[in-house]
Length: 457
Image (cartoon, rainbow, N blue to C red; front, side, top):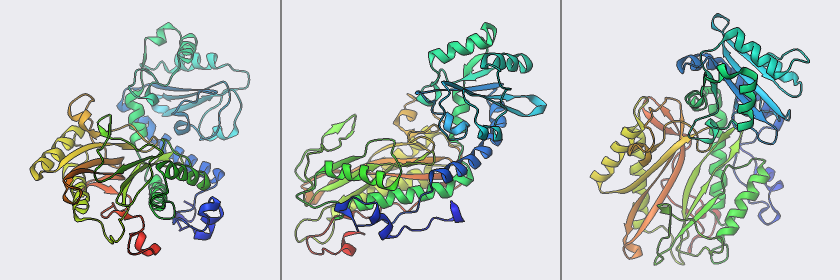
């Protein structure tokens, strides 16, 4: 970031961009770069990333890698293999070639001339058609494999359209088509490799996510007995707009309430409908993420709304959160190490939970250039071999997403789910959080203390 560090935005700055109803509430958050500044930083990252690509291509046996971007149908890889700018040339093609002793050859075939591309790619002479250039590149280097966005299990690895595939066959010929292979393994390593230069920006993005959710789960936004789940969701959308960032999924709010049966969806606690009014005694959960600088966060935190006369969280709920913290410790500190299988990590974690008598679920997934990114997921799918187990890669980012279910005496033995999700990065000693985890519920007001200091813990 500019100046090498993230500063804290003043309350006055955020009040200026807040909605009138929330003016003056303030959110402690890092300042964001202008669009042009973002492009400059991301282009510096791109130079570093291109410097890693040749070794990756050779590890995966890729002689040529072609990414095709179509106007009105952007390829999800484009902003990570080319300068992150708009492309509107009908069909823009980015070619990477293992040129042997010449190293990595990079060629861009675009509908419009773009001067900035010359920093990253060779551009053909004016008047040369993409068909001609592609044919000449194949004839000159004759790569053993030509990797394309086909055959993968994820959208970012199977993004090549039928029409662009047909165009490449026409340009390169049937003989070349026999050398077409899926670029999925290469794409996964490329996107799952985090740059050291990205760390500070991502750390600030996690801080911003934390600040927004803390405000959402406070009396700055919630008035018990009046505010609905829909109100909180709309506030989160509006805060994203005010901050000049976006999100990659719709924010969710879950409400658990004494005496109320928990509804489920796809095996998990279901989000509350937007008409649910938040009441005293409710346990709230927010699932939220931010997209910025080609990076994404994923964040889940919980808050308690004290009843009248209640100054603290019931002991049973505190125990429930402590069980989830114990689950985090098992996965992050004891089970995870670079090079270990995601399935082995899952199985060791769940074995420890069984030994401790904690009912647990783990569904952690990679983070980075996508919210549900490529890489090693630590979850029941990899452990059951429904998805191939993968080795943990040092430096990768992950969403430590999980929950523990605990019987709460103060709720007449009702089972309560404490869900947490935190971005983390892998070191030789295991996963480390970007910001400290939640070890106490946020309090939304109090039946005894009503000052802001008592609300925010």
